[in-house]
Amino acid sequence: MAKLALNGGSMAAADLEIPRWPQCTEQSRENVLDALESERWCRVTDGANWVDRFEAEFAEYHDAEHAIAVSNGTTAIELSLRACGLKPGDEVLVPAYTFIATASAVACMGGVPRFVDVDPETYNMDPESVRENITDRTVGLVGVHFAGYPMDMDELTAIADEHGLFLIEDSAHAQGSEWRGQKVGTFGEFGTFSFQQSKSLPAGEGGIVVTDDELLAEEARQVHNIGRAVGEPGYKHYMLSSNYRLSEFQGALLSAQLEKLPEENERRRRNEKVLISALSDIDGISTKPEDDRITARGYCIFNFRYDEEAFGGVSRDRFIEALNAEGVPARTGYELPLYKQPAFSREQLSALVPPGTDLPVYRHMHLPGVEEVRRTNVTLSHNVLLAGEDGVRTIARAVDKIHEHADELRD
Ligand SMILES: Cc1ncc(COP(=O)(O)O)c(C=O)c1O
Image 1 (tube, rainbow, N blue to C red):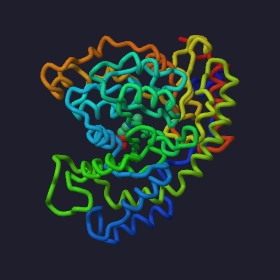
Image 2 (image 1 turned 45 degrees about the horizontal axis):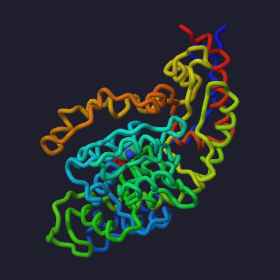
Image 3 (image 1 turned 45 degrees about the vertical axis):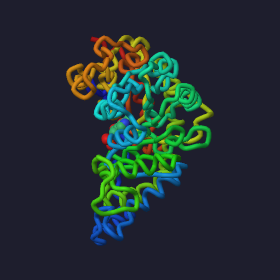
């Protein structure tokens, strides 16, 4: 008789209750209504203060001297690159396993993304691969704290210092993550964050950049406000730039959402430990290593790696199908390494860089760490970690059940 839900058996995770995301709290309603009724909906209107207030709150939470709110996490990277002085044709090192924005922002600002490998254990930029890819045209790197698990900031800051490179920490996944007692985003020139709906600090859309450098902060403020100088409203514009501003509604909403983030992250961390411990008993499942230098965690997703050999040769995609049928909403994650994305075709890139710029040939690339992660990764969203200890144990039970009955899935 079939045991797996995919084959008509009962669901192992039928009782799994995942809190909905995002959540409209009473405070969110109150703040947004306040912004609405104030009739000051744009931050440059006299008397508007929600975006100012949120910037101050986020800077304090993330141990940063300055924070500049922007329209989303993609423009946060673009603005940081611009403020760091990226010139057309400059090379910037980026991981090849991430959301496209980490690298497309470089290309859209006229730079050349150079893809580096990731460590399959952590999914983060592999410092060795970073070193190997530095050329005389490299000006900086944009690393990602993937899934909120911090990059090795000891290694990456040392490499950046040694080679005179700027370092931008794409922290879109990492609101609240900490390395050696310091929140991420402030180790390099800029940290960038996304507040898109699925993130753990959501506003539908939104982003922010943080920095400890006063001059960079001033440059970023000018870039974000279509070239106006700081403290000079009106119609004198000192640089050609775009409008990256966040609306007052989003500032008001984010201020309310930020209030609950620290406690939620602590709960996610507790439940993640329970889940990692339960999964570690299952042959063929590996989770990210514990690292004492990571002193606090933020989250966007939770990943584990699946070894099909240990599941009798059942493919990762078939395993995910079976897990979904058991009631666990797992996904494959990014299906293409960035070097295989159609958007990074030679034709498209060469239209954005100065004529004659030497471009890497992406389509022949094969980075072993990236290929391993894309083949074996299983992703759960961060709100699964809010399902409570019993909830996350149910997830591990469903994985274990599939392991036990893998023979039902063989073709
Ligand atoms: C790693 C990473 N960087 C940047 C972004 C871009 O953020 P946004 O969607 O707010 O533009 C995302 C969004 O998912 C992301 O995951």
